[in-house]
Image (cartoon, rainbow, N blue to C red; front, side, top):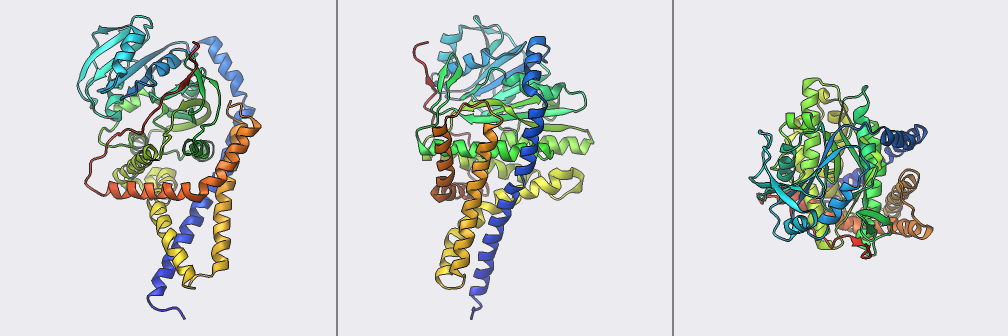
Length: 474
């Protein structure tokens, strides 16, 4: 017979199981809309539209803003990558955010920088700009050298120097595919939609060979900690964000690669410099403001514009990144909590944000609690062991299925010539991530949650970069 003390423990155990099941069902609900979106895009002949746009050369002017802090290992390769983009007219602004390494000197040597006068747009919060430079080799490339202020601060400094109707934010450790920008701006050219933000797929560049600032040879990372992130990124982009975009409930455009309306973003004050989750906070604030104003708008995620980025290859670097991501998500939810379950904000308030609370707030707390509580109750005989093993098999099996389904979706949409051996390695990684890595990730998310409620200041932080593997023959 169950005692009075065991009843609340049993209730907690069932809560753990229920939350886990609900999270799996939420991710399962993404499968059909993600598949439909990929099917519709394939039928729309987007590749032909892309090449027609390239031939016409009628793309809207755009500025690429690259915030850089201690990125001397990859900043020159990134600059060359951006300068080789297939686009009719664009500007590149690299913002050196008070780096303490050789970022600025490497830029100066490789690009032959000369100081120029440039008056920034007032009203955007950012640290003092020391000087602005233009490349003598590439007239469409500028470098803004400023005091350190963090990523959002650096983006605002670049935005203050932007004079085009669109701007794109791309991380300094990232490489864009040549036609990515043409594809990313296409939604802005649709007169039937007031598109204010577009995001694209972010791929893992670790292990890939870079030549002339482009991915020349695709390869999986050798380190398991980096390879498992390939599976994570595929699941996050090709499953979750694609489905959220189709249902108009997108709450995040990745800080690694996003295109925005300059007028709209400046109109809401640019990026928030007081948060470490500036990418999510901006999207939430756009939803908040535009819904309040009653302005029709849309935000899109496109699977084709691929941005390649270097991910952390060590547990220390990855833990810092994930804790920061969790803090950023919590800050965004806290600042825009008035939207939650508020019909005024439509699907964002009624569907998207409650799902975030379940996954990002309750998820890590309940799952970590379950790691200790559920086995203990099973050993005490309060939970039936056969039921527990069946549930765990279902949970792990479902997680493996979702990751594998994401990999299958990717092969039909992303220009990534993976070999049979690489696909087999990804499938095996999708199995292994459920046993140890997933649990570790939840501990990091819980740490981020606890840090959010502490008084310790949030920082941009260093996750440790090794730089791209470049072809030394060029």
